[in-house]
Image (tube, rainbow over all chains, first blue to last red; front, side, top):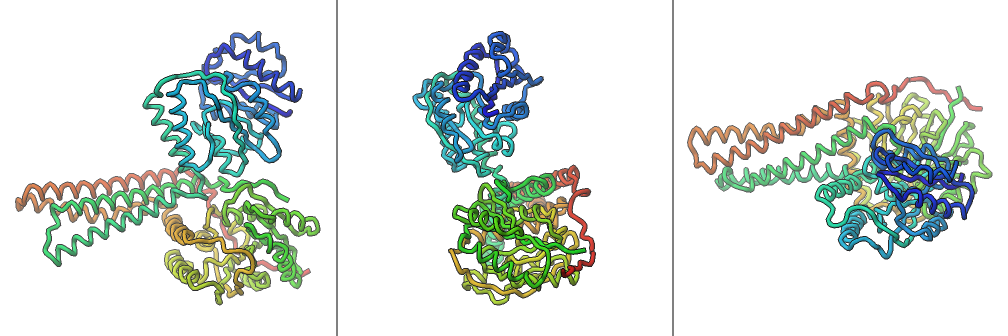
Length: 308
Length: 317
């Protein structure tokens, strides 16, 4: 099986049959060896009333329903298990980019690439949405160092092994290309033509912002232990602590040598603050090490490409 | 029982050295008449290192190669090599010919004597003073803090009995500390003077931030060795200075009330006491959390391997 298209169906969607038709025609033109797998995540099952339109595709289209609502990451991994293609096309349930763009993306997958990530050009969604999207991507670029411009596009193409080897969970679905690139998989970004956009317009709520920011923070610290920001955290903690201790010592020496009082001097509070912050940082570093040591025993910190 | 030897070499952009390295290893072991394999680990090289390995592999049945997807560091490369190794004795060395493979037989002899880990000691270090000095300081700190006294932790040329390192969790630059880590299981370590050559080819890939990383690792290693099984003790240690401070500031606060110092001072000392007291509570709670983490892990069962002392005889063919 060459291609497996996994559609993550999150909510009721009346356009699903058209989308499947489009996908089917794009893929048929390349090879008869493909399958389309629909993963209905929780509520998404409600969108399958128009099953008669879909069943016209016969065996090529398979539908699975998850009996409860799980994260996009879990949904994808469940779909991966049911699939058998070498190249996996992951998409949402509506058509975000043009059919030609799909073809271009599929063409771009060659021997030197493992991941194709789209970059929507000529966007048709409201300016405010575009702005917020751009901010999100820019921040992610800044923090992670990977130059991907459009993480929120609902289509991505991967070689099977990328999905099998990259550790994915919870809200990290959006960052899948980055997580994979960190492991050493090669990514290509392809400009695509935007077709439509669904969903909220205007300002995304405060909760959304906070949530996204925390996801990016998690991404930063979750680099695996070879890059170790956690380790440096505890080193800085020690430095802070020593600085605080030094300040305290300075104040005490002044007391004995110059007779300056200790009480009432804000410097003392600053010194205590440094010491507290420092030791807290060092503690979190230690806790992190303990967790890694005890529960991460079998986690491989490297990724092997070949063994001869 | 014939002992089988595995030689593990991490390589990063060493295209000039690879063939010379392989030849030197074969030469060094020719007299030993021992069964051995050479495992070369390509740690994400961007030059011709891997193609050369693949080419050599065609004519050399004793050669094995592992190619990483990206650059993961010497330690990860060694760990990957350990996992592929079939030998009962594992020898690691540098891929840039700074270590001399001719020293390997002497290391093997020490293992035969009954030691579990033999660490190379570069007595005549051929590097610039600016690299040797921080090294000496680091070695002293590591030896004193871990209790495993070696003159040269940074030497990659080491021999291990395979079961000592098979299930060591390590990453980044921690391979220097294998002897200290293995000591947790009772492994016996000794050192042996070995030759050292200055870098013949290529440029050194280390910078100043490496020093920072090494010290950072030393701190972490000590924490792991001392506290990973009893974290509460570690946090108690952290909390100690704050406990003392709380007592100190608390007494001053009490004095301020009893002797009616200015209200500003009284408030100040209360504040200081509160801050330091808070730190004590916080750290204690973290310590309990740490204990919970350890208690819910399977550390007691799977943890660190038992090093069984068996006399290793290498039968000469």
